[in-house]
Length: 549
Picture 1 (tube, helix red, strand yellow):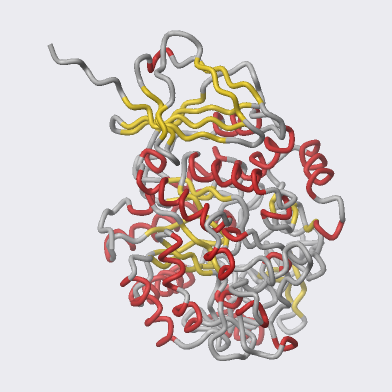
Picture 2 (picture 1 turned 45 degrees about the vertical axis):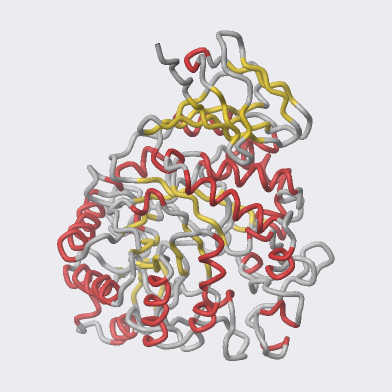
């Protein structure tokens, strides 16, 4: 295991759902023993860290983000002993484990809430936010506009309204109560003592409420989050906190503090702009959002991704751009949910191999720690006929055998049907088939991960865009500790000329990283490249060897 305290800056994270990954006991649900069986696959893929979606006991009305017990394992997934073994086996293979810490809310089935609603004199009553009216905090936006009409819900047992920023079955915790803060710190300590390497902290902007504000990003929220970080720094070593704050980069910047809050934060706005740039065949959306991204402390890192377990969120785009994305990527209304698109990467790219590779190239070369979503490495499809976001959370496709090799259960017992359509069906899209085929997407992803891992500049380096007259060509330089790489991407479906001003690197020899192929030496003249459709090139710029006198 890498003991570098900044390991998360050089990592490649793989996001997976235990329930959807591999079923070891034939009950139709993926489980922890099944995940342990597949650790060699993940090690071979080349990832460094596993991000597990919620594993806690839960009614599963929000796929586990409605937690009913912070100290347990959902019985479908296994036991605490299974989890302990998972951590140990993962660490043996050099894989770290990050889990969910849902700090903002619980399930309405959590014993804390049940006690609170039944007895107004209970100490737990003040663990949630109650009101006799639904008129408070009018400045707070409703996040799930497609299902919720208010952030307040009447509870007939408590005979009061309770506050929730998400679904009405997810009451918000009251962080003005010091007992709640201590309880969440204790939850964090419990799992750190189990050996986990960090937490993806869910919905962190919404912990406190104040009249006259939008109840987001409040100073009190940051004060508590700094307590989380201080606890980790003082009691544990080499652990990481990853913030889920779907905000503009300037607003997320404050969640890093001065290096004393979160180690990492998701860069949500860059993701839709990658899709926008490829569809428009114009680099502008990428360049603009990266130029709007503020500097962060040296010990901090952005996390970037193409797709994840939620919708392709369009909250951080203009209304005009949102309409454009819907027209281009979600013509069927069933593909849409809330303010986003509930589709996987391959279907969004019309299963175009060149486009899928180009998107991965951007993921692996732009600043930040890449996060891969399970199944995208083989080009899995989705099922738009499943409700909520479940269409992108279907069983992992391991083989062309029954149930895609995910489970031995009867098909009807699976937690969700496997993808079986003619294009993305498990008979053709599966790990076993792609491991045998040298030209498969899986084998290509492995190679690209390996190349990225050999060049720390991709993880640690600065970013500088190069100007080209052709807006269909994106070119940028990454630099770190004497290492320089040049990345050039053709965002168009047609061949394009790329003319670059590389005079500052005069005399250097660009070496293409995939084939270690040297290109012509850079001179004072414009450097010309011919780029095929959706083509990308990664160059190492080797400095000229000085002749001995």
